[in-house]
Length: 275
Image 1: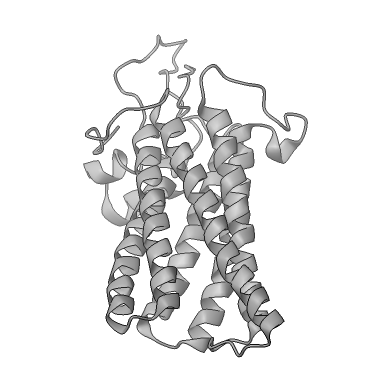
Image 2: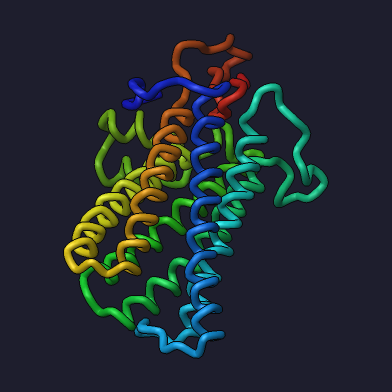
């Protein structure tokens, strides 16, 4: 479990536990996005004037994008639960190359859910050109990169330790081979989990500080936005911590050598194949 050995143990393994946190957090995001959409529809029926900077249609599109992304996250998280649960169940789309296992399906859905965050961050910064909204642009790009690493790592052939990872060789060129590189960035899956963990930690702290500002101004819409953002970011933070804990390589067991080839353990959570 790396540096997160202190996390409480629940469910059949850490990855299942983390996936359930993502499921409930994603469902919460869907419900949060539904409330403003309903409010916008009620306002338009009453012919009231909305006090948002964006036109009502643009606000509706923004919340609809959030709800769609949250739906992708929820289904993808459920696919991860299926992929990591014991005993193993047959993948939903075993016959389709790009969804041939549930872990790959979940990774693609996470990527689909994250992609809209980049244009959304750009539009938000155009409307609110401040430091906070500027910070969301590189943050969203990092999250897209992390989910793309998920997808890459989940294709058969990329799971084994003998398959050269994308990130580790580049980190070694930059920093050498200290423990934090070789241990905590041992494979692309683990590196992506760490990116998402730090991203969610940043989002949680930022949402909390924004909530304090909203409480000072007593703006009900801002309070609703940042309370929900703080809670959801915290839920995703816990889930991503369990993802990190569950993706460390096991070093306590290694199978026999075959010929001149030293056995290598896969990064599968479930089994450790030896070559």
